[in-house]
Length: 598
Image (cartoon, rainbow, N blue to C red; front, side, top):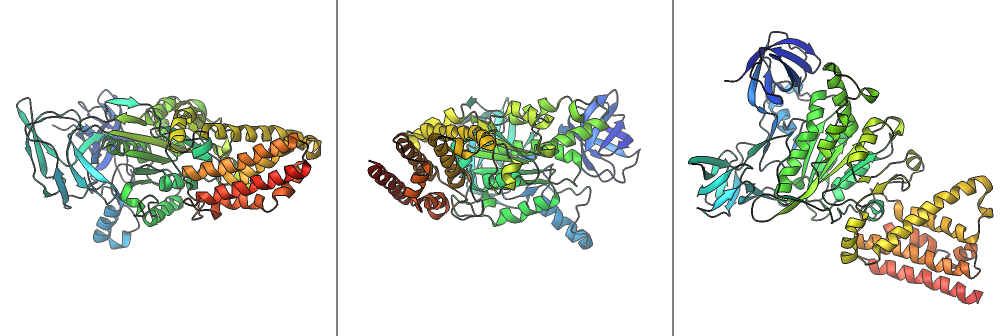
């Protein structure tokens, strides 16, 4: 029998209900006459403290609270891709259609209590069976496939925890997600298996083994892929103040990365920013296939004016959907914009629960919640057969007030991530995009992915990458001297470092996310551009050793300097021979100077 209680207190998204004996922690409940979605977060005696994921306006003490007997869960199955959900997996387009039918004059608003299933019940999917009747099956085994979109083949799997003999399997044909497509005999009982399954959002989905993140997640952004690479199954953060380009950076990652599936969570962002995502993503083309990007994307929209409790849940909903596609053997990128707004939701709910605040009012468990979230990333060997490798890469935007990286959310996040792309207000104001500060940023995956670069691109990748970082770090030291005594006090060797650093910044690190050529750079082109600049530096350094000045070197290469800077957007990804030709012309000009100097 479901638990039934009554509301005794309402405080914003938090309500307290009595007579809730038998209720469980994190159990999903239905609240009031409108049957609003809620979740139990604390139990004291017969009282349950419930955070409601919809507006509590109009609720009254005495209304009924009914337990469902199950934790907050998501529905997993074909139909997820291309859909826009809110923070608790309610499909927003379908809700809009439902409201428009009943109340056309309220089409722009989401009414409370609207109950629309996450996946369409009437749509039929073409099922291709793959398993053998009479075989032993267990959680994760693939029973068949469904072409969910033209980009993604959906694998229908045995739910985790089910183990037995496959006694019946549907023949090839069209079925809805509610149709039984297989039956498994488990301990003398028959278990029906459908195309869909449910999973509690706060419990990580199981896997066989966790693997080392040794393959890079190619993003097409040069400063990321070359200087601060992300690995498939890795964790990263993009912190930055207002106007530094966090959202554009995350859009670029979602659009251009080599991940097969993208889950984009708009967590507490302003409505106009989320509207931009909802309008742009359906129009984007997948750069790897030329097909609509939404065919491999799930959007979760939970703006700042939506109920704050749903903002807290949206992170867990998103990562559970990502784990589901990971279990099929896909590389998934989860982008959360932003975890700061999620942490603010935690702070507000904790305040209404009258919990003791920690630093800056955040709850004392902020660090553990961040750890729970980021630890669900990883590259794994999935359960079941056939053997599959999948990954979930998590990148969270952080919005520290005033760009202060010492505030609690940023400082705690740094403990659980391995890539830190620090956005700099000064770089953004000087029109240097992406505004990733190469002095504050870091990646712990550089050595792990180096073997992939050496095998697939060039054996000297790590050598050139480290040399570029040394030049940029040395340039920062020299800038302190220049500010005190000016450039003329430097020797020619240091002047060359400044010149090469400027070439690196203008010709390599700067990147236009809206330029058709410059928006995405292949690994091969990235290395060729870097090699061209550093080979120029090496040859110029030899000339300086033999008495040449930086001014003479600049005069020697003349217009070639501008061509090196413009190569990033004037030479296409499949025209690498033009970069090599430009490099040879630059070296030939320097050799001519060397001959003149004798």
